Image 1: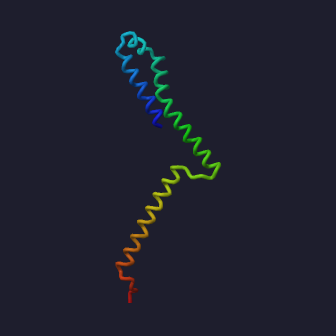
Image 2 (image 1 turned 180 degrees about the vertical axis):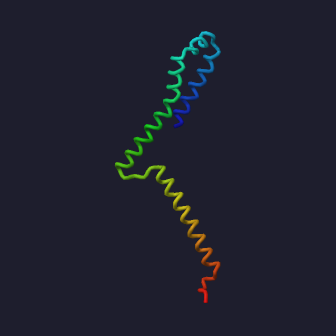
Image 3 (image 1 turned 180 degrees about the horizontal axis):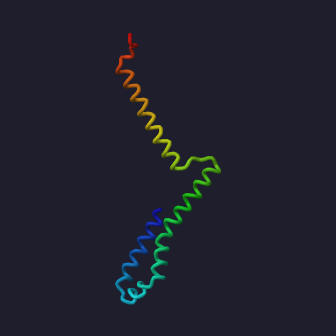
Length: 100
């Protein structure tokens, strides 16, 4: 992802330099050029999204867990650990004696 960030920063830097030129200002007012520029700027996120989809598909084929699945599993484990600790504390709080 750092390559995409570096590329984006370079493009934005060059765009700022060009924006000072009056001839460029006239060109920028063309809607076709603006649409092309917006598509170019969104290309990085489109590529990342497609790479994520391909990674998930490959993980499924090879029976590997994805980052999202691991994150969900970690959250579930934390929730269950908290629940066990809470039940343990409530059991120990009653002294473990049966009513009677």
